[in-house]
Image 1 (tube, rainbow over the protein chains, first blue to last red):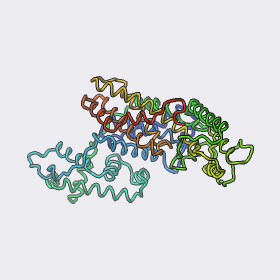
Image 2: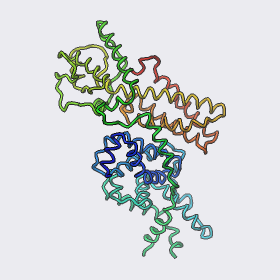
Image 3: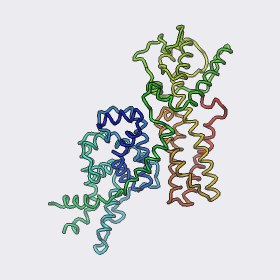
Image 4: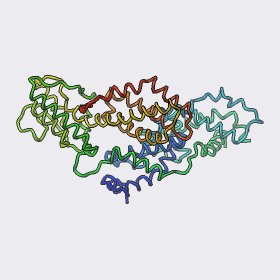
Length: 181
Length: 278
């Protein structure tokens, strides 16, 4: 069954079609939500909210983009709005220079510590860079997909990814010499 | 390979562990989605206007209220002023009943309601309201302009208001349920207790709140700030009632509610009586 047939059946009230639509997309939506939120309860809530909104707006889906793109656009909007509201769970942007990205002594460095620093560096990225970085480098979305989800040109997605990587390199660059030697 | 490339390699390798997702609990989330959708069922193409599926109760309340308004207008020399205000977004008129037919062009002298037997803006305006109650057609903004030009005095509901009525009624009904939860939650939290049903309850209400925020009711400048605060409070309650919730979390939620005056504002927004929201 192709996308249009599936949507038509869902709009006609077919429960099996609804479940199939959900099953086809829930994994990727949930993964994106979890990558953004880092919390299972939040990720489930965002995922559920995404599908609730999607089903209520399915009639408005024009089909000029892939259904997955449309769903992920909703998911991202839900995640970002939800994270802004749940301030308790937001990791504040930290100045890694102050928190000692360069103050570690060689004896204290280890892979788990390095990974932790990297994760904090990702947390500290501005939202627009973090989203693109997670979608592309972590979850494997293409720039075309990211552009459609974010309603920006693919070139903008590439530029933001480049900027995100540059920021991560800048933050962790003082450790680079030891890693690559 | 230069240093930048090496760092990028390390970054990509380690980033795979960043917020690594666990197994997806498909069935659990599906059950919750279905439960939430029972409040706002999926529109079905049956030739019936979409918002008619919200419930016969909403349509009945609307018809009763408009009928009362008509009776008062017929028995008094001047029109009855209503408490309704026109929505700030006239586009709300066009999206109130998605399946309704909105003529492509309108003129000031044209009547929209199909049942209008005699020309005349005041009569057509009344028929427009009947049409809305019966869920047949969405009157256009131009018709309300025609009615205004007829010289009909009084603050009668504009056609755009009538179209947004189901949304406001739904919002008021929803806020009644939210008030019940918040009142219970506050009482339980102050008594040092936690009701296990609160999490599921607050999740359902949170989903509905967000749907209302996306509806024409969410564009009401009076309702929007309250809906936003309700969304925040319900999200906080959900977190506080999770398995990780602590007493201090519940106290923080109650403190936040009191500081923002959520319950008093909620109770003020929910008028008493059968004509609530009309």
